Length: 187
Image (tube, rainbow, N blue to C red; front, side, top):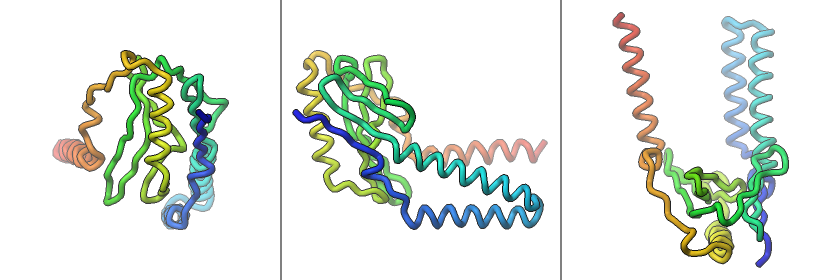
């Protein structure tokens, strides 16, 4: 079988909507600076925002996954990446998250120690559609099935975080923030 490589630079491109959000954030920072931070404060705030945005884009574009005879190698944008041998990988599946009217699916692997790792560069979402996502997932899964013994495969149990959706987490966080705020105000 051919080695599979999924690179972030082939899949992720900054969109106009993301650039618009960045410009809105910078405009809000400029407004805040005009009412309290001053020019130097605005420059620090805007510089930090641009630096963090640039770092996020740089690491996303440099991220990649490689599937081959030695196992799966993943790199999140720094260094040469880390290889996980086939005998350490217990399960491979797709996690789909629905949030705010959009869906995002990403391939992930579960390791022998219980840890899970997402495969960068192998993603399908409304923002970054990948028409061949299902085919690529099946190709990764075929590598795994051909490279491991059936006795070494075990579907992981669902954890608490698997049961909580983004919406539920946001509602819980809002309730906690409101309760803490009420306690502070009522003191």
